[in-house]
Image 1 (cartoon, helix red, strand yellow):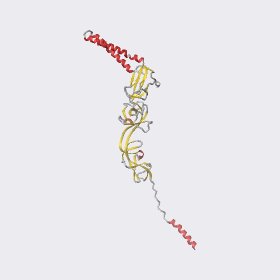
Image 2 (tube, rainbow, N blue to C red):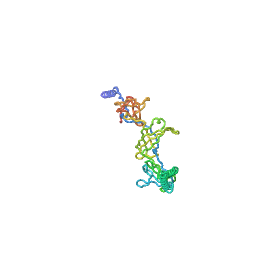
Image 3 (cartoon, helix red, strand yellow):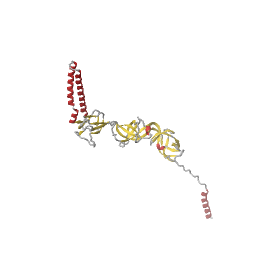
Image 4 (cartoon, rainbow, N blue to C red):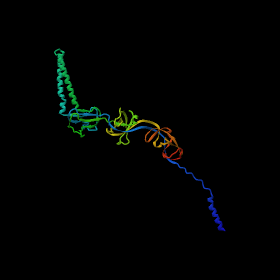
Length: 357
């Protein structure tokens, strides 16, 4: 009897849980992990990035007017000038010496002829004033003096031209090299027309930039530029658009723009290939957002603004920008927080979990 009672009790205990109602199911809420950032104000630019080749603003070539022996000039310390030296306007770069130069000049003989003609003219002038010499004879003597003076001036000019003097200050680009590019020693004979040196100022260089397509209409004289060369990572050289070519290149159909590049330490050299960024327009203190925060939904540009634990989809209009940031013309204000990462699957009013800022 006792065994029967125990068995019935066990059965009842086993059936009680089966008859009790199930507990309510707990709803699982998923929150999208996102990274947010504040909307700030900053400067944005409309940039045109192109490439260009540097050249000197102006270059002077010094050539020998007469043949003779070449003698390269000296610096203030007495050292022979070399390529790369800085020279001043009026400085003698080289001199052509030798008998050939002396004969070509003939300055001494010309001077003696001039002195003889001058003394003859002065004595004949007194005779003419006293009425002892006809006007025709006096005019002949006067013409002889003029011719002698002209010959002397020519001789002096020839002698002066044997000294090659730079008309501008700058840096010696080439000096005393033959047709094969080999340097010539002092005393080497050169012929008339031989190019002894080329000199150019390097404090400012010109970058020739070729513009294509719609960029032609966006560039004008006076625009600011930034120039970079891979040899100086992180360093930029400021410049200004000087002028635009009046015609397009008939072969490439490009428009040439000349950009003046400031080069105070003469780091840049003529012939270098550089990257030129032309600033077509710049705006200061405008709302800006990272380019990655802007997405497109339904053909419209939108961002997701953080509101507590949810996000609100906001349609915006964009202005100037680059690959990193973009100006927001309408739809956002500085100080609002927007999603910059994790917005691929976001919808309006979605719950989010901020995992980074």
